Image 1 (cartoon, rainbow, N blue to C red):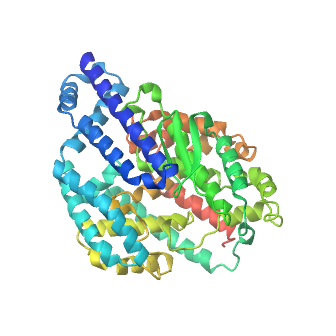
Image 2 (cartoon, helix red, strand yellow):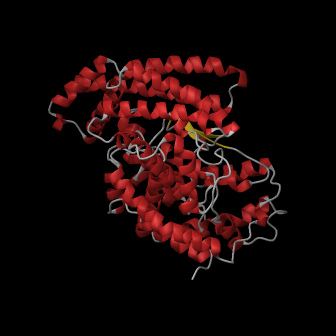
Image 3 (cartoon, rainbow, N blue to C red):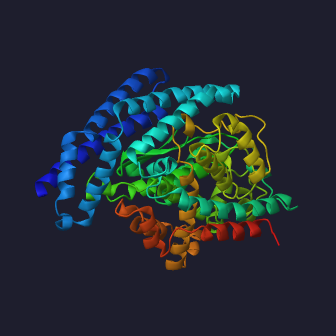
Amino acid sequence: MNQHYQNLVQKLEEIAHLNGVMSTLGWDQEVVMPAGAGEARAKQMAALAGVIHERMTDPALGDCLNELKEKNSDRLGEVERCNIREALHSYELETKVPKQLVQELAELSSRGQGIWVMARQENKFSDFAPVLKRFLALKTEWAQRVSPDLNPYDANIDLFERGTTMDMITPIFERLKQELIPLIEAIQNHPQQPDTSFLQGRFALDKQEALARKISQDIGFNIQQGRIDVSVHPFCGGSHPTDVRITTRYKDSDFIESLYSVIHETGHALYEQGRPYEFGDLPASESLTMGIHESQSLFWERMVAQGKPFCSHYFDTIRATFPDNLQSANVDSFYRAINTCKPGFIRVEADEVTYPLHVILRYEIEKGLFDDSMRVDDLPAIWNELMWKYLGITPPTDTLGVLQDSHWSGGAFGYFPSYTLGAIYACQFYTALLSEQPDTEMNIATGNFAPIKDWLNEKIHRQGRLYTPQELVQRVTGEALSPDHFIDYLTTKYSEIYQLG
């Protein structure tokens, strides 16, 4: 038993190290690679992906796992059993799919991205529709191979949010629609709207960068084991908890976007830096799911940094950084301005009240595509109809509507729900934190973030993959995933900001 387990550890750590190299190449491509090196880098990454796939589908790995699975595992600890379980899941995912299907999905993903970019530029959904149809066929076949007992869309969701199904998501999303649509209408119809004029103007990029770097480190980002850089799209990457790299983008007309994007990515980074790598570079030490990861970024961005105590603590620093712009503002007006609620066409620019409806719309469309109640060719009209129904606005073009996200061009169906599940998790975790540490908001107001970071490290980050998301939420909060805390938070906060009756 011991020798088999040692063999497994050796194989899994090699795969983890190769994946770390792949992550570093990806970061380099986004941040510092010369523009002309794209083709060479694509070949390098394809070669490395081939090596990783060989290691992950090696029959010797399968034999080792089957041997461990069949033996009595009572003598193994929780971490060892987790490594076997997670490695077996990955191995089955990789080996149940024929090579031809893997290659066709990879090729379509590569081609689909370029076709989507052109269709978006030219506002021609009809050019992208064939890619979408082919992806649906391939992803349905893929689902039947890897999880024949699951509904094909549930199998796709499971890839991002293990153990989560439509039966769990649909009632939660129905409840959000029921509560948030009337709240958004009440906000839009209210005569008192926050003044955001002082957030417009010119904001020096070097000052933005210094401010973002300071706040990221204040809340706990370890710069000795991380970096902050610039990329087209903000992301958190890196190869290991000791090498975590975050990016943002700066524009001189808006400092809020870059600042809050750094805080968001810092939340992801704190999760990565807090992982239990003393377990080894093994599955048990990895982060859990997309939704749990998103809960950590939204916890810091929204629950903490968009709250009034945080604004109180940093307002003088922010005004001193941009004195000409924020001369007429105060803590209260700044807090209201950064929490404005206004329906817009673009998901990634949406505020925290309207954002869930952008996700629900996409979830309902994906569900309809997989159960054949919606046709690909009808998507622009369906999209616009749902935007009007949920947010009271209609995109003037498909570029601002059905073509705005890149997810479908890579076949990432089932990804969207994770964003809103993450917001619900974040709220539930924050409620549990307040219950255990009632002085949390006073700590935020004085810039003492260590107790919050330590709590998240202990309760979530250091748990790795020992538990399912459902088990983790129950352990941390004492209850199952529930939208109640999220709805109460949004209703209370925005009723106060907009002085709703």
